[in-house]
Image 1 (cartoon, rainbow, N blue to C red):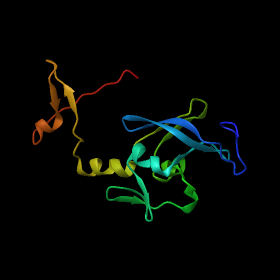
Image 2 (cartoon, rainbow, N blue to C red):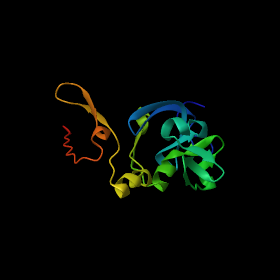
Image 3 (cartoon, rainbow, N blue to C red):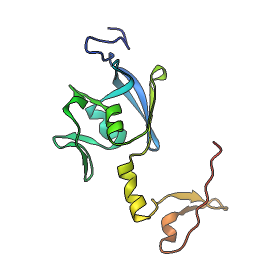
Length: 151
């Protein structure tokens, strides 16, 4: 079967792809797409931890103490419906099948802890003298963080 050719079950032959998730780009050598849902992405279950730190267990897709129950239809052999999982967890997904690149936004359930606790995640930036300064260095003090983006 030629790369990208749709097989009998409507899924393409495995090809490589790049997944943009959080602040990293993960290159995978084998993923599949589904003809019934153009642009949808299926990844190998063994690749999940590299992509988003989740792992498939009997109780669902789990990351630390969070487990998301997933329907059996999201697993086909060694492949997992990553696009379906993104939809299930409320993630934004942008896929470009011709360039074999998919990008995923943050999961609301993981972001929720920061919103509910009102504690910003720690980060570091260089100050005016070029020294790295961490937000945690100011814990307990009032801090104004100003950001901008050119886009």
